[in-house]
Amino acid sequence: MNKPSHSMENEKLSTYAKGDLFEERVYDYLKRELEQGDLWFSPKFSQIFRKKKYYSREREDFIVFDISIEVKRPELTEPSMIVLIECKHYGSTIPVNDVEEFCSKIVQVTGANVKGIFASASAFQAGAFKFAKNKGVALVRHFDEDGFKWELSRPLLMRALSLAARQRAQIKHGMVEPHYQPSTYTAYASTPVGFTNAWQGVMQDFMHGVKDDLVVLNKLIVNRPPAKGRVAFVSKAAIEKRTQELLEAAGYMGGSVEFQAMIAQEQSISGLTVHFRDQSKSALGRISFHPPEINIFTDDSEAPLSRFTLAHELGHFFLGHGHYLEHEEMRSDDLEIAASLRIPRSDIERLEWQANTFASYLLLPRRALLERFALIAGIYGIRNRGHGILYVDKQAVNYGNFKLVLENLSHHFKVSKAAVRLRLVGLGVLVDMLNQ
Image 1 (spheres, rainbow, N blue to C red):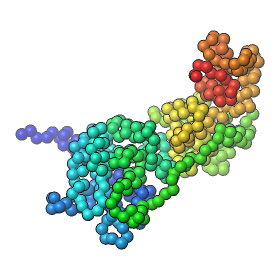
Image 2: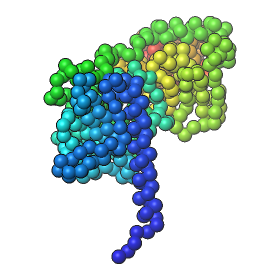
Image 3: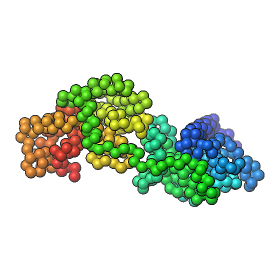
């Protein structure tokens, strides 16, 4: 019989080590959430354990579970609910057989409302969802928070307990795609009720269909008001007014906006610091709010993209987004939201849209932009011929005027041509038939 190779043994040990580290990370996270009252169950009546034993009548022995949470009614000695959690970290996807084995262990624990969660750092095979749902078990893919684009404060995270169809599809994709990189939430989960992107949502779903006295059980949870409209609505006019105030305070007189005076003034007030770093593979810029610090990852601080990134992060700061966030990163795909003139509905997209709108208004101030445009229009003889003062379609003459204006304004204000085009459309100066 062949003995296993050293490489196979090392790989097995490595898998066990990764599993232990993952289990420890999940335990520490849930323990912190429970103590803060952010895991749905009241910390006063709940306890979390690691490697606790539960008796199995079938085995006439004890079964050890990685993590367990016990919720106990005040007048009883036995728990009203037990949540049993198994943690796995594989190099490959989680097969349905592993979920089936976990379910067979859960049903052997009796005497309380027993719920099960199979938590994994790895992706799940698609077949695991249906099986887990039929068995009343939740599947959670728990992600490492390091490198997240957004780090949400608690009030905004609690917003995410119910999801629209588009978000459900995104969560399921994140649970089955092995190389999926999350940008917002710690956990993507499937429960017997549906999908959620928070551990709190998993625990909340477990309350559906419990057989115990709901009046009593409701005393064991942390009741929170419905989380609607967590991110305040800020109109375009209000954002523009804020940029005008900042420009006036910094002594802006026209041309490309210089940030030094604005940043220096704010540094004396709040301690805000701005640093330019080497280029990053993933991020264009990053802001931390406590203490306030902005990092821009670029080799050229005067490049249009670098300037827009800095203005974007300043937008998060001056619009008070530190109320919702601890950290935020701007990545290249965020520029797609900058192309939207409509205010998004979701909290996260709304924060991003506000910061992008702020950047546009700050870099292209209304009065200075319109004065410069009027000057260019006079020089090149551009005038309203019935369709708008600047009208672009596929006709050579219209496209030529459009190109001249964009190149001049882009160079003058040190911003991209795309930013100029969007700002002119927003001001009603440009009628853009090429993007209808």
